[in-house]
Length: 256
Image 1: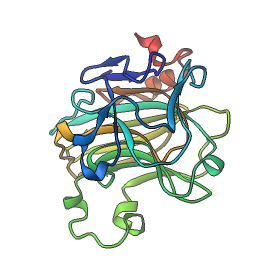
Image 2: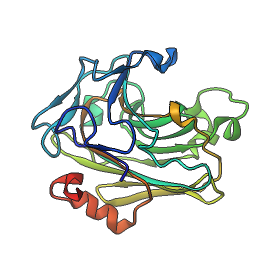
Image 3: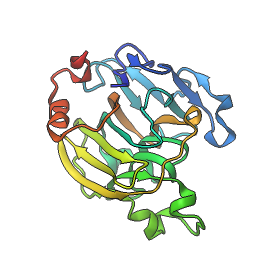
Image 4: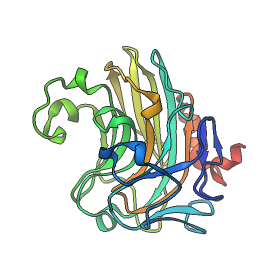
């Protein structure tokens, strides 16, 4: 494990190999130089008893600005053979809680969702699909972009989607993103929901080129709902390990 935030002790991570602080930026497009340490969005809070385990991160509105943790050292990025896993819990009814538009509960990138990025999202209209995107360098997979990505079959084939995902009000759902062999010709990425394998993409050959110092782990982009127990691993996990993680009585803190 390289990073873990329980949200039980505040906004900063319980464990981190890199910077454990949470940051807020008012507008990603204007650059991250304006990012502030701490939580500075009134529509996001940590509330005791709202998490899967203890306190949880509560998102109440879709608004401008983003919160994030730095990727550097907190993710074991590798230019030759990158493996890892990302675990977290969500609680929401996508069809009633989310506002119109795409929503990324997790997005990890140094540039954008379509350029060397790992994310999950809900599609923009009801009924909402839940999708995993593991998207390499845009200049390689789409060197002459035309039109919206979500209307581009080259982009769509890079996603692993789930129709009628098992989310609901007053119900916690575990998400695990498993990946291996990125930056090789045998890259794979899989989506697990509540310990169950929901799909794998086996043909990830597009490189993932990061300026690690600019890469961040963004939480709750366009999201309205609850989030808890966010953790990052420096290798891909087995099916058994993912099931064990899902079944932990007290969450990831049980592993410490």
